[in-house]
Length: 206
Length: 206
DNA sequence: TCATTTTTTGACCGCATGGCCAGAATCTAG
DNA sequence: CTAGATTCTGGCCATGCGGTCAAAAAATGA
View 1 (cartoon, rainbow over the protein chains, first blue to last red):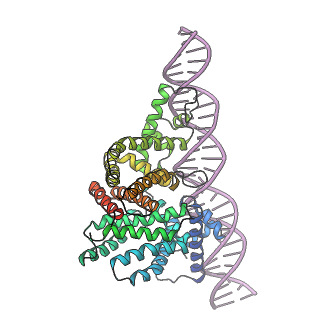
View 2 (cartoon, chains in turn orange, yellow, cyan, purple):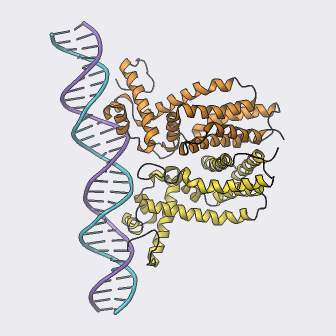
View 3 (cartoon, protein in one colour):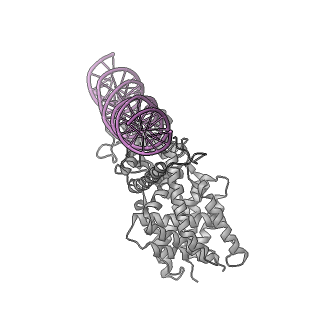
């Protein structure tokens, strides 16, 4: 049975599903440990304790494996921090919940966040262009913009450029995580609170 | 004559200096065009119109070439935008001059900014750790912190965590440039003004 | 039990990389 | 003009990569 992105028609066998999960987990562990450029199929296979060919057997190629890693981690992040965000009422509270939610997830699962960061930064398509670059962040930008616009409509926020703020907010969060990776002794949650403060002051009415 | 980082004792010959400059220019052009991971010595040599061995002859290795590229570009950036920053009086004006200065440089020399961005993101040492990562940004962070602290001392700025703000400001500038590269039709200077606005509001007194 | 299918292994392929080097070409002094 | 130093070329090397494959091993089911 050749592996496919979607189990079209045929269901995936037991062992097939288990192996895929195992290999995805090994990929996350390996990428977090040695970085994306050094996470070769051979290294990932060694982490999983299987032969290199097994990965080729269960995944169409490295690209599909990386796609599955991204999907797996992002689903997990969304499932973890979305509930805390949805229970907020105001745009300001949502912003704070977003920033601190990512920080809390980073503390609980540093490997997963590091892995998707590595993939976003380093993964490139066959033509050399980024595979998950700025384009992949577009839905997130639009989501943040919607939040800002609602706040502007009801007067909770002042008038500003939502796109610039969305890009900046996401950049601030990414940089917070990157700085913490390089300086693990710093207080990530304190950084998150301070960062949220900066953003709230930047967009509140005069 | 073997090449060295510093001309120790012996002066560098005429042709040596010319070739080094030519190869550095070719490296900048190549990295900006195809990205750091694809900018092999062979490609850079082809851009320069010389044999691959020439690079090995004039530089100790790829690492030294990349170091020279970074030094060259950073010196140029500093020479270009520092004057405009130094003539400002207040911390707020300095911040605005910093943000818009980088934007103006990006418009004038997109290849150079893109190249150092590529190098900072992708260049790794033999052990896989980043060669110009967060650690390399430390002097810049300290410089920004000094600026903030001065503003806090004389009451121009409120009290906030200077390190978090420094990390965030630099991240916002980097993201501005990255977004512009992906969306070249957007108004970079307008983004810079808006970004400076966000930052000024984030740190001004209540 | 035993034939069939699924899964795994380990060797192998083509390719690109950074670096090396013998010899040719070029430049420079005496 | 000529001898020596400098510079350049083009081919070569070892390494690591993603991917493929025949054959072995394991699981499955009649």
